[in-house]
Image (spheres, rainbow, N blue to C red):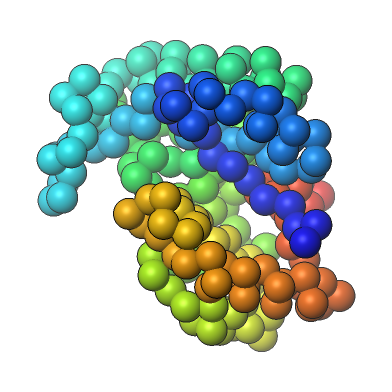
Length: 206
């Protein structure tokens, strides 16, 4: 439909390594390749986090360790799309290593960072290294469109997070629901600005 989005890539995954030509085409078509680390470390100390491997427990990472992993992901992505600046997505929405919050120490690497809280803010109130998003799991097209209408009415930034569309991930929305949403967005482009996280962030900064 011509809409552009951001694909946050964990570069150690098979989906990243075995589809490099696909990602290069996506970037050439105006989509953003965003940084989602090399190994997707998450804080394993919270409830429901037993799936995190001990070696990828973010709460035990050092600041230098997370810096190195994020910079390696940037280098990998640059080899695909040739770009030096991009946005970051917190893995599992987690922001701290053993020494504290890390993203502000990497502000030169990114123009924005995406969190995972179901909130939306005006451009004037938006913190660029802490952009909220709505994670979609089993929502209907109607439910997602209602969120868009709320953002329209209130004049706020709405970010959708999709892990799977059509069943390839356990955090999933149906193809039909996703199609209903993006058709609504396309049909209302005169009123709704739809873009990658990078381009949205550059517009907010401007």
